[in-house]
Length: 582
Image (cartoon, rainbow, N blue to C red; front, side, top):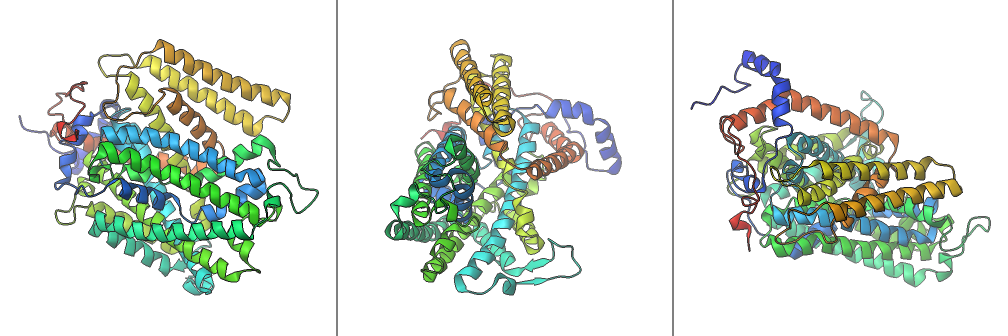
């Protein structure tokens, strides 16, 4: 049977397609693919395969490189001075635990379905095409904005390291509006250089990341040792100003958790490791070690850095903008230079890993036909998603050229946390629901109740007046969340058990991850939500005007496991790809 003409073949065809948007949206938006489809014919749309060259130590290196950027040199001081005091190391431990819970959820999906799509693919096989596209589009934009900010930050830290003012590296274009008129050619050069590296080879990119990450860790160890050597243990309990709150917990438990919410953003980046799953040699063994191992190592490094900084200065004397550099300045200026060099290495590795991740997200989004399939192509010689890497690299460079760092920082983080929240929901949903066999409403009801309870806790934490009523309300929310999870645990049976690796203590750990991610989302400022709303609206518009019609055409042509409206139903037997078993 001949396939119908494309929705985009003529202008009249496109107008006819737009008229059918409601019915097409109702058909395609909730459409769920299977793991087998993602690992077979959807993957084949890239043409060549990505080369399986990564091992667990590569993944650990990529995870550390993606997380330990320059952010820790800033967030540590701000969180300690304003919220946690010397207990900032407890804040980092709590944030690390939250990151580990999310990493568990990513790992279960990545082992089960080792494709380059990361969260996009996980949500597509769980909640359908529209939910996956909405979160994937926001995540791509988060990556681009974050990478542009990181590139401009590279200029600042390199300037501090070599003693040349940042203004010397940039020039002002008077014709452009303020905030977009400082031209940074060095940031553009860094982005384009990284783009060339990731286009050339994933293996070589991993080796370069290993080298830069090792150097960066050496600088961190140096800073930690200097702090323990030159620091004073009394600074853990004694502020400089006698009027400031004293003790290890100067602002109490609430300060520790507020500090954890702030420093959690130093952990963002481990999700990029899951996008490398398609290039891992032994996914079953390497991915769990790589993802969870990197989070554990980074947590230890961050706690040591926090302890070192707390020893160097009383918490009420810490510089919120550059805590480590300021702590050494005036006494050991050369150490401040070393910190600048180390931060430059950290920026380079986080940029490299993030740009690897964003290209693979775009590649798999292209495979699903909701963006042009041109992005899905894998180059036959380099075995990398060349088109996606080059396009996003140029896009990132263009933003880094003009846009001020402070403007970019207001646009990042919320999309990533939202995806973490969605993936935690997805891992619970897939454990308890099999399409056509079990009803999804008990699971969806549980997830909605847990979300509402977590939201009530978050609103109470931030807006309820201090006192016994607030403590009662917070305790009530925790009690409700625990009771809801306990009832769900004992009344709804699991219907799908992971064959290779799964999140332990289901559904407790993913439920805690949902709870914590909502709490962290509540710690963001209003501008973050404005940005999220704007880009989400833009993504919906793109989906309605283009993506739903492109995927409808791909379905009719048989590119999505569907031919002429004949749906291929997911079954538990077809979930596993025989080539995936190691």
